[in-house]
Amino acid sequence: MLKLRVLDLLKEKGKTKYWLYIQLGMSYQNFNKMVNNETQSIRYERIETLCNIFECSPTDLFEIVDDEPER
Image 1 (tube, rainbow, N blue to C red):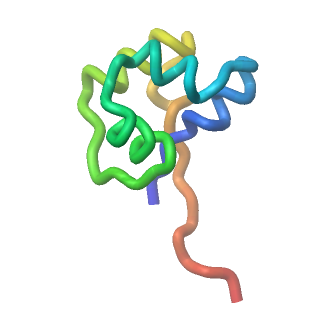
Image 2 (image 1 turned 135 degrees about the horizontal axis):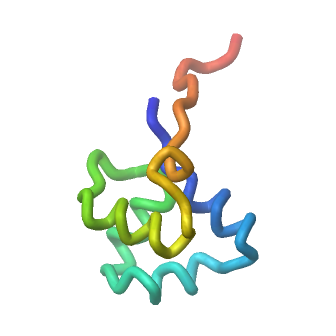
């Protein structure tokens, strides 16, 4: 499963979710779904904006995680 690392990047930069919410200018409902990995898609423009905000590449925004529960 592909996971957006926004919360990790915020922590690394010492910024808050509210700060990012203001930077992105999107609805809070959509913003909250995005940062909590509860959305099915993210627009290319949004990925580019996140990269500019965090000064990173798209590979820094995402990670692949095992979505199977541990036994």
